[in-house]
Image 1 (cartoon, helix red, strand yellow):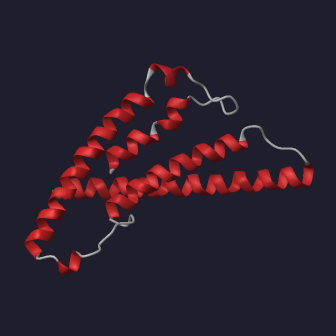
Image 2 (image 1 turned 120 degrees about the horizontal axis):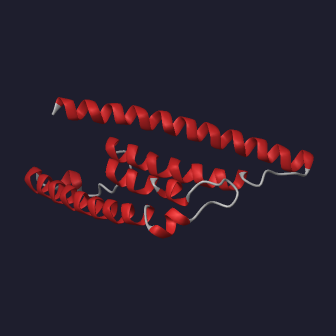
Image 3 (image 1 turned 180 degrees about the vertical axis):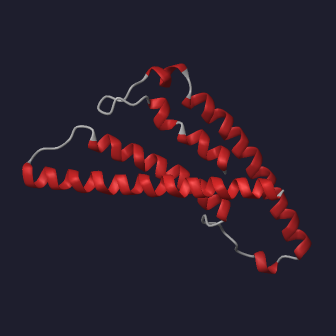
Length: 144
């Protein structure tokens, strides 16, 4: 179990580095694009698309990280009024349902992200395969 926890901690650190780099890149590209548009009346064709792609990665990887830390929004209305055994049963049931749902979504997302349609689609301005861009969806569901 310690090895698994250590592996999860290393994965978390890697995700944090990726998130930092993606957010820094997003901010830099957006800043340069705003300055370029308003001062020089020119823009890079790839900037909007790159910002969108980085935002997709930030959203999904950030959600996976927050899910592990249990910092996503949740409702706890009435938790303090339930008996401990009922609360434990509800918590166990909700975790089982979440695991089943995330497993299903992960399998479906892998099928989508690496489908023949997306493998053949190339982003117009960045030249990146759409499969690379949307591969974060199954990665995030697997990490959660």
